[in-house]
Length: 139
Image (cartoon, rainbow, N blue to C red; front, side, top):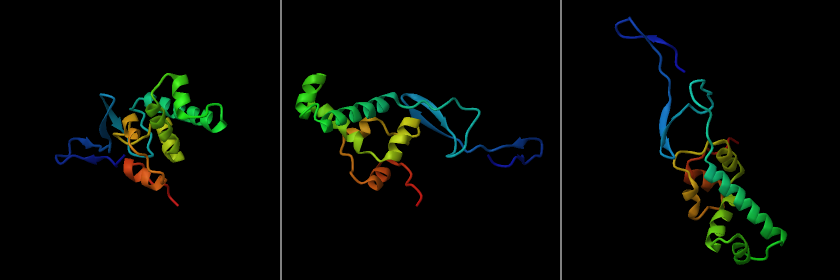
């Protein structure tokens, strides 16, 4: 928060709070500046669809890597889903750990949703952060 100031006429105190607004799942949200907690805002609600996609992707990856299921086609038959859907969900297992953590905490940038990962996911974590607006970690 900024320091309070007097208005031009000297009759009011002006306090500027650098919040911004965004739309998320059809609702407006108030976003506090990075690193600042706000007692005025409800707790962040993580995107349940993204979290479910992460859980499914990692579960299916474990099944394939362990050999419990031999191929994506066999896994798709067992799960009764399209093999392409499994392929899309497996993409989320390639995300940088800090991106996964941000999604679990509900801190993903505006516009990042399950649809974001239906396209190609860059293998390079720096490219992922740049493509979707996640901050690069400090060295």
